[in-house]
Structures are given as structure tokens and as C-alpha cells.
Image (tube, rainbow, N blue to C red; front, side, top):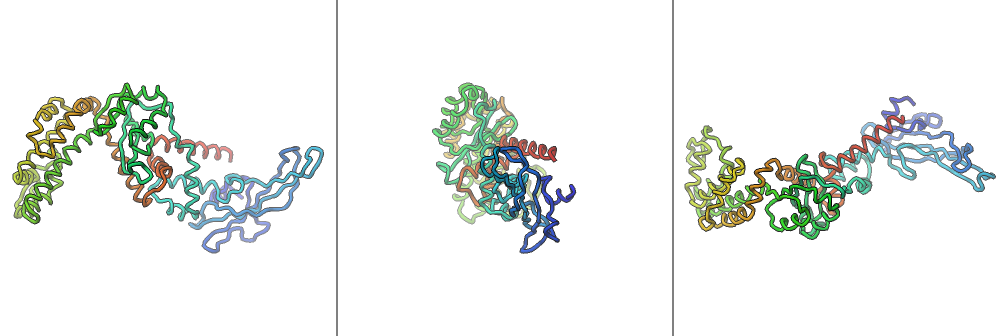
Length: 443
């Protein structure tokens, strides 16, 4: 068999040949599958005495190989059986069966198929679809994931200097239904997926890391969830807490939206103000720097008058005083964050919370409580939870494609494989590349 034929069939064993002696048509197509008749026979020495073993007939083994003509391909291999009769060097009879490269003993699926499974697990595709495409069972795909366990063990002797973590909705297998993403915020690489966000579980998880690794952490970027503070100070004594900009602005964002809905309800369902506030909700929540000053459009909610985005905002804010005050607070907070200005932030937080609408009073107290962390974030402006939030969106897509997960190990494995910049995906790809290169050199 020449090299081109071996490559087309996906055969890596140099001893494996087409069985032309027993079959006129070595490649047959029937029952929606392709059958390739092969023979494996080579001289074999006895593992005990070292003498050449006698050939003792054949055993036919059927193995699922790489697909041919877009159909499942069965390798019908006529495996040579070997025999070493009893002698002074071999007190008992020794039997062997010819081994085929890329096929494990007593396995009926080639390693090439399993490698394709691992490659497709990195794509946004459900396990059932992968199994149907490769002509295997769903349980085979699961077994491949279980065998990847060696790649998903974190290095408990090292942590990056700058880390970030955030929670996300995972499933019923997680206490409180929330899990955590741990990320190296310098290069945006995912370190691990943690089962639960509860303090006791997080403490036990991080205590697995060496104390020297935890002392090396210099900054921790996190949201404004208060219980994390005590935990971080205990686990990472040398770390500075950075309040994530997204979650800081989100506090005012949610309060402004709540006040907008309240103004709609006060105006009455179906009224002019109700329809205008409902239709232009995105415009109200848009940062002022992104509003257009020269786009005159016919606005249906204002009698088809030609208005710019800024003029629409001015008319909307005239409907309600609380909405106007909340909008200004929201825009001032965005400016303070964008300018990384300590003075602008202090000026905003100096407003008495009793002078603010009720929904903003809680926001003001929260931001005052985390004032130091927000100011620290101005110094480390490049360290935000933006990459973590992007990973959250990708996790949502993975969950939706798989129609949910019931097992945390599978869930974690699919996430870490699907993220091209995770340490686990990089380690697995490097080992796979080294394995392929070693096989190529052997051929």
C-alpha cells in the first residue's frame, strides 16, 4: 500500500496492508457504511524466550476508523495470531495477537476517531451532534471527556500576579446555582472554573494553592459583592482589591432603568410619556459621549418631528424630575470612570444620599463603601472584568447548545476546551501537537 492510500484511509501502522489475497474488492460500501478489508501480520518474537513465534491463524477484528466518502468506515482487520510452544525457555504455551498502531487492545474505535472527538469538543457543538457526525455513541464522547481529566488539574504551586473572578449561572449541580470563573487578567487566560461561589467553598478551593503562590498575588479584580472582601484579605494578604468598572457603572445603570420604569407606570399605560420612555429606553441608557448631535430623524413618538438623539433625551428627561436626576448621576459616574478622575468621583459621592431618588440612595451608599477600591482601579485601569464578562457570554452559548448540563465535570471540561486561551486548552493542544509530530517522525 503506498503512502497516498494510507493517508486517504487514515492508516498509521506501516505493517497494516489491504487484504487483496482474500478479497477481490478490498473496499466495499453497503448498509450506509464503508468496509475496508485489511490484514496485519509481521514477524513477532516471544516476549519470554525471544524466539520467533509461530503463526497460528487469524482473528478478524472490526474497528471504527476515520470516515471515507462521508460515511462511517469499518476496518475489518485480519489480525495474525501467534503461538510459542512449551520448551525449556518457555515452560508454558505463549499466545499473542498482532497489535495495530492507533488501536488499543480490545478497543473497537481507533484513536483517530477519539482525536476528532477531542477536536470537535472545542467547537460550539453538542455531544449528541458530535456522536452522530462521527458514527459513535454519546457515551463514547463522554468517555473521551473523562479521559481528559489529566489535563484539567490546576497547578496548585502557582498563581498569576493579577487575577480576577466573577460568578455566573451554572446549573443545579452547583450550590446556589452559581459558579465562578478564575482568570489571569494580564493575558486574559482562564485559570479554572470553580464549582460554587460560596465563601466556604472558595476558601477551601484557594487553600489548595501553596501559601507562596497566594502571597504572590498582587491585585484581585472583583465586583462589589461585599462578602468577597473578607475572603480576599484572608487568602491573598498582599493583594489589593480593584473594583471592576463594569460593575460600578452597572449599579447606576440598574437604578436608572428602575426609575425609568417607575416614571412609565406613573404616566399610565399607553400614554404618550409611557410610549416614549418605553421606545427610547436604549437611548436613555446610552453614555452621553455616544449620543449623536447631528442625526435628524423623524421621531414617531414626538409627532414625527425631526430630532437628534440629544434633543430626544432632553424631551424625555422633562417628563420626570427623578429621571433627570438619575440620568445626570449615571452620566457623571461614567465620566468619572472614563476620566479616571478621583476629584470627579469624590464630587459625585459628596452628594447627600437623602437628596437622591430612592433607587439611587442604595447606589450612593454602595459606592461610598467601595470608594477606595474604585480609586485604586483608576491606577490599574487595564485590569477589568471585561474579559471575564465576555467568557460569561460564551458559557451561555455553550449551555444553550448542549441544552444544559447535569454534571459539573462535563460542564467544566467543555468550557475549558472551548476557550482557546485557557491554560488547559493550551496544554492539551501542545501535548496533542507533540504526539502528532512524534507519530509523523516514526512513519
